Length: 125
Image 1 (cartoon, one colour):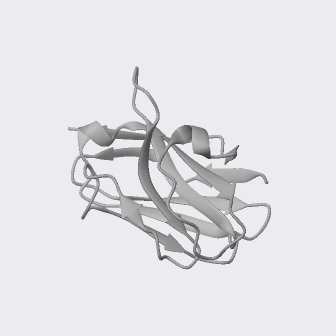
Image 2 (tube, helix red, strand yellow):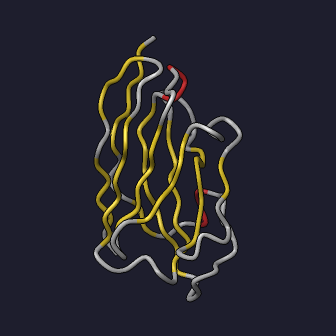
C-alpha cells in the first residue's frame, strides 16, 4: 500500500489546516491513523480509526480540535482547528491491515505497516 499525505503548511496559532491522505487501495479492512513527530521528539499518535468509525480515538492533546473524516474509499482527512504552536510537527498517515471494517484500535507506531511520507505543519505563535 502506498500512502500520500498532503495539506501541510504554515499557519498562525488559532488557524486551521486540513490534511489529506490518499492510498493506493481502499482503506476498508485497515486500521488507519494520523501520527506526528515534533522536532526532536518521538513519533506520537494523534488519532486512530477504522473504516466503520467504531474505534475513533484521539490523543488528549488534540481532542476537541482535530477531526478525522473519510472521503472517497481511499482518502482520509485530518481537520485541524484552533492550532497551537505545540502542534508543530511532521504529520504522517499510516495503515495496518486487519481484515475487518471494525478493527480494534492500534495506538503504537510499531503496530503500523505502511506509512506516508509526512507533511510538515508549522504553527507560529
